[in-house]
Image (cartoon, rainbow, N blue to C red; front, side, top):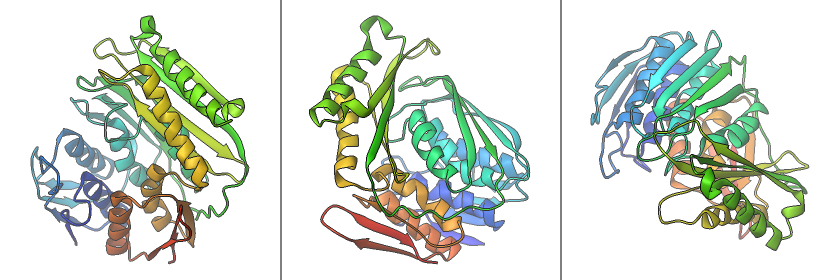
Length: 348
């Protein structure tokens, strides 16, 4: 049985989500304590609880301690069956975070998985946007052998949520290593600017225009296209987001996003997303700062040596590496190679 202290490193929900996934994949029972201990409200919140319950559905697991506010959990997995799965968050809790929690499990399922999640947030604080997963994470994982798609039925924002999305995953026989050595030359910049029931204020267009103006100041605009989406899918909660991604001729894919909120102009939202992407491009990293921690479990599970360069080692990167080394006996090395970049490598 794995014994994991959730108070280690970041002390966040990421440790819980990944520990559950590795328990299922390795078919080893898990006992985890001090769940989200370092957060203002420790224990399982609604989105974390739904992640645990969804993982349990995928493998017919036995679970003890799966209650709101619980800081201790026992999880005993069985075979990963897959198939159609329904989940309901009931708050503005992040649908992308739920998808990330179970995606590694789905890769190893016996059957294709169709996970439909309702009444949650697609674009919320402290989580990637749904379009970041769709256009940055999944295309990167495709290179490693992960065949997955996301469709959005309803965009959802804080505080009401009520968003809805579906993740479909084909099982993979194995994961391939990835070696992102060189930034190369910029080929294209794309994006999608979304607003829900805010078309009368041209929110999505203003976000996109501001992002293009910012790119133009850095002489990047000629390679860029940003799609404007005036969404009408969710009448319960207005909101907006913008997600951008850049591709190079060496296969590097870098992303950035930003959220609209009360008191923040649409122009500021678009500018923020563009500036975040520009920071990644100027550093010539091969993985952006958010994708870096998301890739750790996949390269740990993949055969062979993987590595990439990123401009920042976040607490989530450190926590994920600690967990992979603890539960999978993987070995990672982090080396600062110049004033801008860190090389993160799985050595065995």
